[in-house]
Amino acid sequence: MFDELGKKLRNLINTLISATTIDKNTVEAILRDLKITLLQSDVDLSLAEELIKNIRKKCLEEKIPAGLTLREHVLKTIYDELVKLLGEKPAGLIGKKKIMFVGLYGSGKTTSVAKLARYFQKQGLRTALVALDYHRPAAPEQLKQLGDQIKVPVYINQNKNPFEAALEGMKKFEKYDVIIFDTAGRNALDKELAEELKKLGEIIKPDEVLLTIPADLGKVAKKQSEEFHKLVGITGIFITKMDGTAKAGGALAACSATRAKVKFLGTGEHIEDFEVYDPQRFVSRLLGLGDLQTLLEKAKEVEMKPEKVEKIIEGKFTLQDFMEQIEAVQKMGPLGKITQLIPGLGMKLPEDLIEKQEEKIKHFKYIIQSMTKEERENPEIINASRIRRIARGSGRPESEVRELLQQYEQMKKLMKMLGGKAGLERGVLGKLMKQFGLKL
Ligand SMILES: Nc1nc2c(ncn2[C@@H]2O[C@H](COP(=O)(O)OP(=O)(O)OP(=O)(O)O)[C@@H](O)[C@H]2O)c(=O)[nH]1
Ligand SMILES: [Mg+2]
Image (tube, rainbow, N blue to C red):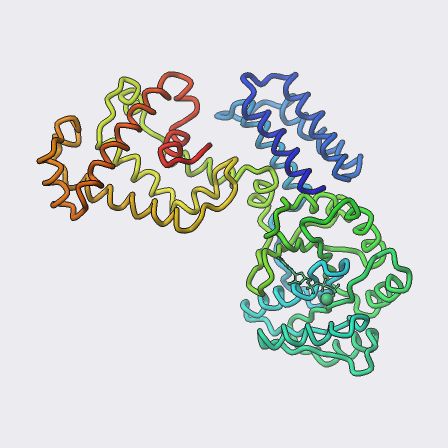
């Protein structure tokens, strides 16, 4: 279901990116689709309408900010509004002493309790855990084991009474900076457990109540979130299992139902698989855009000078230019990082492939450095004996020098093909990425 949301949102964004022209009608059509998509994903009607209204106002009624096309502006506005819904960057949980976790069976509460404890511990805060799940016999022991792993004390009530546990735990850890309570896994609709949870809330009076929502949770998310919210008042969402295949659209329904914001993400089974929620990164992931903001910024940094573009269009693309391009890509950071930022790619390339590419770039640089200025300007003059000399000078095999020359030729052709106005509009980044076999 939530994966479905991600897919639909990405389709919508693709429509926006690939439409030949963007005018009022296209924007209206996109907003209609967006509204349907949100409603189908259990975002409540008033919230969806508010979101659409804001986007329409910013895109069609207000002046477009200088330097942005309507297309970019619409994209950015949709993105900003989703960030607003899901939450801005959280201010952390500074000063929050009593934190209670609630959530469905197996949603990842206990694991997330340990992850958060580790996070606080790293900040130098004295942290303790209290087991409140006495329904599943192995639950306190599971918490204890996790606590031992990170050397954080765990209180377990020998009478297996959750209310007593809450009171005793608070007493025992009174001097601690943070106390985290791990409640039983429950279906919020189960009366008996719901009562217990409500009472625990009243006893503990937590400063923060985090609801764990697995990223791949289905349609029930909205109803469940509402029920939990009624019982204990949710103040933040901890999305777990972000490492799964789903795209975490689940957060939308949960946020919409509780009006609470996302604060943390779990990205794996281990204690260190934890992230503080970063709205830009999260929404980009949801929209399948890669890290849009960062990508736009980085793309600006490596923008080519107009003279250079002119030259390329005229077909005067030298090895010197080739090397500058390689360097420009390198400046953007490790290739692995870049590929994660690329819209549409939105996934990691295999590590070894990235390493190989980076190695190759380094070697190409050595080879180009071993050429004379003349050779760089007019690569056609590089014959067999020159190849031999360059190979010796750079300490690379002749085959690699030939490979470089071939790649250069290919890129030159590509540049010509991509030349002209359309190519320019698509921007230099696309060309660079294509050169490295990546799709934009
Ligand atoms: N892949 C992945 N697995 C996770 C993540 N968080 C938790 N899990 C796994 O999900 C399962 C359930 O986790 P628990 O922490 O026991 O969940 P719980 O909500 O405490 O479960 P109950 O107490 O039984 O309701 C375990 O196998 C965890 O290892 C995550 O972020 N990613
Ligand atoms: Mg548990």
